[in-house]
Image 1: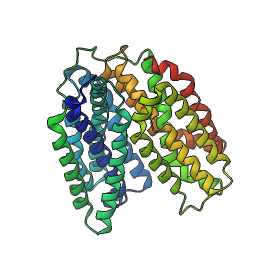
Image 2: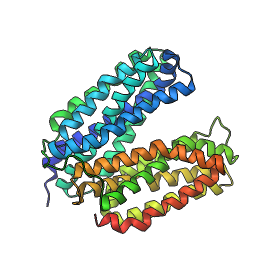
Image 3: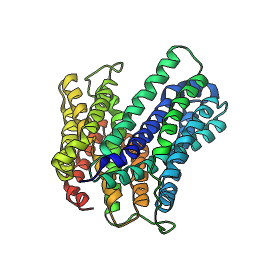
Image 4: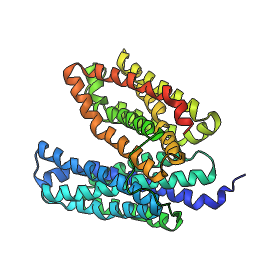
Length: 377
């Protein structure tokens, strides 16, 4: 039997890294309206500036995978985490679109760095303990996101400046990273190729990550509009669907490791995909707001553990170094978040928004159909 006490500090450090990443990222959202006013940007300009965050992440992710595969995840977790701490106040201090774009690019690069590295570290801890842990790690990212947004909202409600708010958020993230630092595993990687394109089962895992992140992005960006289009809720309360989805996802991830241990990855992938499809369909055919709310809960529960299982499979497969595989899966998944909602908007304009969501139902069928290949990774 594996002695889990020896890896308890590393397990805690991984949870703290996920918590810090989710917390720092969520701190930005309540600040953005104030930052937009500070830099005197219109909606179009601000939208372009926000792309710098995603661009920084997408560039940093594959680089982090290469370095993590070669040198281990620990230095990249620290680089990304402390980068978030340093640049959160700089984002708030930005006084021009150019300065904000540069700050968001580095902030996004830091987020992409810790995102890949903490998953590599989590896969290493999971491998040493020989039990599912990834769902709980990802739950801490979601919890961090809730706490970050709540704290910033409270500070701003107290009418403190956005710079003070950002400094408070940075201080909390710094505390989490300082506690995590001595507990991270000092693991050296091998000597992989300088760059490796995804291959074998990693391609499938990347596609599944993109599909699942696409669902999350669709619910975030289009869920409220869908409810309004269907005539189920007024615009003032349509955000309730995403809140229900988020709560269900956190609960699903907190219980996910037990469920994976109890029922296995295969059943969890099949059920997760089918429940997500059922949830999407329930929203689309809902005769009332209550049924639509139940549909969002089903989407949250169904999708909760799909990404953690995919990340676990990427960490243990032998086709590629784990760091490079996780970088490929994370980058593709993040691209799903960034590009997916835009594609949904395109289809919604060409046909209708409900039809675009029916396409998501069809796409999710890929998850249960490919589950056996994921488990064999």
